[in-house]
Image (cartoon, rainbow, N blue to C red; front, side, top):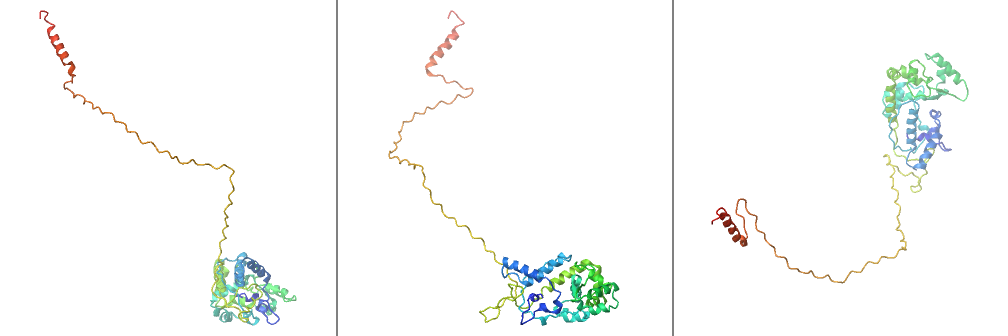
Length: 343
């Protein structure tokens, strides 16, 4: 199922995994078809059906009250689906046998097995898987035994919830039901009575956070169990058409995760030059350059520079013009003669 082999329809020549008894309670294949159709319309041949199952399961767990967790992608769809390849633990198998034959060979620990069986908190089972227990429930809660007998008395092999308390919620109610002997299938009830797993069941029944953390890690690990080679189907119900070039064999597909599509940049718009529109204005005529030669500069004689005498120094004699020297000496002689009239 991890490579989407459970989604392949049976043909007249061959029965697929979908026809196996343990898979008869699997429902809503049409929902996967709707998701795949939308993906093919948006990005053809990029998202595998195996990735659709893994991502849809992760979201269904979260929407049902369970944990949410990051999930790697890049799975490929398997190339085979055979009803005889379905090999799941039976409802009456002892815990030790289930672990040794199914979980340990895949690399799971005993704690991870107990954790993954906790998915039965939202599971159902046909009465054919626990009919003998409904008629002879030794040590089981009498109220549950009566409910299962009434359910299984109807025809057409009806189903019963494996968690009779919160049947649509991913929580630890399933483990609490086991501790009070209300397990529907024998393999579930023995988880609480087997010495190797009873303490794990009690621990999950007490701690919701411990279960949520372990469940998320186990789901990521289980989602990585993919085979060698594969393809990205166009339709999840059928394999891709065989390649006519290789004589009927499908072309090999790399097992490495696919690269995201390269987004090509949008083409730039082509800018065309505008057609020039004739102007209605009269053209401006620029003046012609003048041919008249400029006149040569006229040289004029410079005026003589008159040098002025420096100012007199403080305390010195004043410079008296020569033309006034005689007049000054006569004035001094007249001033001396004034006191004596007889002179």
